[in-house]
Length: 350
Image (cartoon, rainbow, N blue to C red; front, side):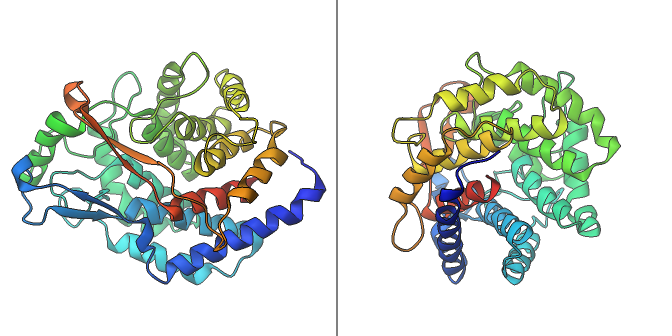
């Protein structure tokens, strides 16, 4: 894809200032990106500490952006990336099947396929195959054995079908009562993309039916819905990313590209800086689809703060009551660090 050479210096300035913001945030271990939630005992949770903090998924996404910058710009960020990888590997669950949980200290919340997918991607892209085998093989094996369905859907939660510990029994109970079951398209797309990056033929028996399932879940307007993320753009992006890598001839690609193109607003945005970045990432998967780039770039320039970052925007959602089919509340998370990371990633990709 191409865009006016006049905007390239502007793009570079946005990237560099955004990376500087992330480097500054790293000095506090990305404290602003942490997701803090209350899980009190009076609601049935077992921990004496009701406040739980999650930053594993967030820091894995930040590490992905650092790797993008290293790959494409020979950016001097290798030591920071290595630090983040070590942090993520050190926070793998030490009980059960291992893996990673969004809130690592919340016993009721199982390890999940989204966090696992992020770790597989990082390790595969850096060809750390021995670390991938050591840290990811067991949770992946359990997920694909016990969470893979005949229709191609893959569960989000990584718990053996027959629990072997009291903790796993507790997690299964909370899956049925609170977290919900069934394949979440955006999580599946992230996992299948990670497996496709491994470039191993053995995963074709999972990837092919998984893509069939995702194609069947595409909405009539060309988008994909997300369970755990706000809006229609994130799910659409990760599904497009998977399809263009693993099934580039898919008939689902064109309508999803058209969906994204049709949703750009007159100010060049897709509503806010985060959604704009995610929509640009979706469009960047298909060459020749970036007609609105200049307007989007102008919008992002106008929205950037003096410190190089962008505003926090709704990103992750937690639908309470999903398991029973009666959602009573949707909890929301966003951070300036996450928005900035996605904006930098989008600018690096186009």
